[in-house]
Length: 197
Image 1 (cartoon, rainbow, N blue to C red):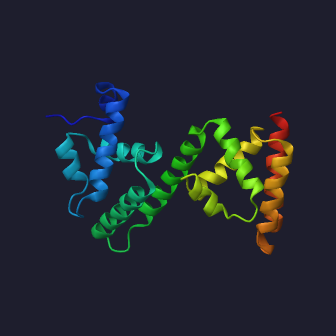
Image 2 (tube, helix red, strand yellow; image 1 turned 45 degrees about the vertical axis):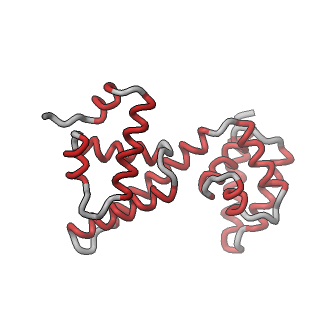
């Protein structure tokens, strides 16, 4: 039987079924023994190689799997690559880092403005609470928090007072060798904010 490609799979299933299918493959892949690799899943689910990789990428980027499963998927990919070639694994690391960035962008964009405003104000009004603790409070990663703060500033979700509090807190908490870089970063954000008003 001819194996299905990604486009065919999407056409054959409803949005919900497709998401469940991608999530299941990603979870099975992450939780399987090392010898259960690409060829096993391609045969078992009757999908092409490129479809298998796109399914995993889709599950990661669209947040169908949690960060814990994402890490397991990355570790398995690295281990598989190393098992085929000694000293390999760096391309898997680079690929998964790229997917993680896209995942964080997707999550940050999926939040409604009122929630972004709430989180940004919480961050601004609690300068003694670390970024990690604020992220933990809202069950998001530090990277997602940073992207949400950026969005709250650029898109004028927060008022000028909150923006100033975020900027002052960030500059104050940056290390001496990063202070100038942080100041420049906020100048760029302020310019984009001004253009969006």
